[in-house]
Structure formats: structure tokens, C-alpha cells
Image (cartoon, rainbow, N blue to C red; front, side, top):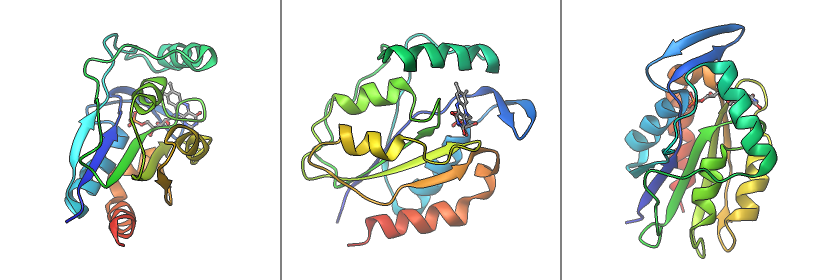
Length: 173
Ligand SMILES: Cc1cc2nc3c(=O)[nH]c(=O)nc-3n(C[C@H](O)[C@H](O)[C@H](O)COP(=O)(O)O)c2cc1C
């Protein structure tokens, strides 16, 4: 039986919903992670930074912009050292300036990806997958990067059927 893992980042606090800024208790990507877990069964690793990003939306976008520009790899609360016991790895996160947050990229860069199957899911507000698929292929050397899925973040809580269907297809051999 194949073993599945989800590596994800999701930010609670203020977020942008098609023109409005709202305070959310559960991040958009978090909904998708639940759908994957329910659909195919998976262990879950949450990427969390030691220094939290600002809860204020605009301040957070500036913090993330500076990090992305300088290719910073923020310190993580816990580091996942290995994915050796898994067959399928879902990498899920928000689009931040066109790709996964630097914290996620930093975590991915620490792992040995040989022989793994990797699937990206990105929640976004218009950029779709952005550069995330290209970044996964570059970082996850030796892995097969399969079909990635872009989910509109403001619709994440209504995207269970789409995300579950995609996740089931990903793990089919
Ligand atoms: C720092 C930051 C940068 C963002 N950059 C983009 C972007 O470049 N393109 C885009 O479509 N959405 C962007 N967004 C919107 C998020 O990708 C979107 O709201 C996502 O669903 C948030 O997921 P989360 O709640 O799981 O963190 C950005 C949001 C933040 C906070």
C-alpha cells in the first residue's frame, strides 16, 4: 500500500478575498490539505516559521516580497529530515509572489527526492500555479513531478470535490 505525505504551509489572519480583506481562523490551503487527507489518507507535515509573518495582510506581503527577492530561507520550528518512507508527496501552499513561500522552498531543498512522486497544490488569487511547478521540478531532483493543481483561495472551502478527485488520480498507478 502506497504511503502519502502532505507538506504544507498556510497562514491564518488577514487575507484577501476578491477585493475584501477578511480575518480567517483557517487558512485557504488548510482546507485543501483536509480534503487530500480525507480522500487518499496521508501523514501531514506543517511548515511553520520561528518568526511569524505579520497578521496584517499588507505588511505580510511586504515581508514576503523582501524574502522572495533575497531568496531567504527562514528558520523553521521543526524540520522534516526525510521523506524516505513515503511514495507520494503532496506539496501544498499559497502563492506568494508567484511561487511557494520561502519557508516551503527551504524545507523542500533539505530533502532527498530520489524516486518519489510529487504533486503540487497552490492556492492563489489570480496567479494560478505561477512558477511553483517549475520550482518543484528544479528542487525535487530525481522525483517525478505529476499534475499540479491551482485552487482559487477564496473558493478553497468549496473545492472539496475538485481537490479530492485530483488527489485520487495522483495516487493511482
Ligand atoms: C504574502 C502574500 C503574497 C501573495 N502573493 C500572491 C501572488 O503573487 N499571486 C496570487 O494570485 N495571490 C497571492 N496572494 C494570495 C494568496 O496566494 C491566497 O490568498 C492564498 O489562498 C492564501 O493561502 P493560505 O490562506 O493558505 O495562506 C498572496 C498572499 C500573501 C499573504
